[in-house]
Length: 127
Image (cartoon, rainbow, N blue to C red; front, side):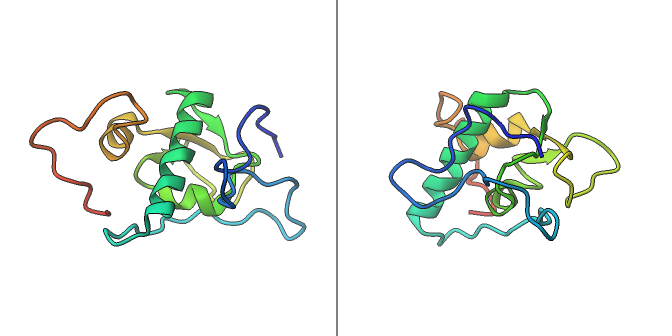
C-alpha cells in the first residue's frame, strides 16, 4: 500500500480522517458511491471540501493511486468529483488509479479551485 507522504491525515481540528495508517488485515475496504443530500451537516460538508482541497493540492489533474487514502472519505466523492482513471477499475484495491474530474469538482467545491460557481449554475443535485 502506497503511503502519500505530505497528505494530511485528517481535517485539522476534527476527527474526520483522510488517511489510514496501515493496510487492513482483511483487505482493502471497497470504495462505493455515497449519496450526499442537501441536509448534510455543515461539518460533513467542510470535511468533503477539505479532503478535495488536499487531493487537489497533492495530485492536481494527474491520476493517483488510492494507497492509504481513507475509503470512507473517498466514497463521499467517488463517482462525481473522484472517478476511476483506468478500466477495469477494482474498488477494493490499494493500487487502483483514481483522478479528479476537474469540471465536476470545480462546480461542487468552487472555493477549492479559487472561484465562485458561474452564474446560472444550479447547485449540485447531490447536495
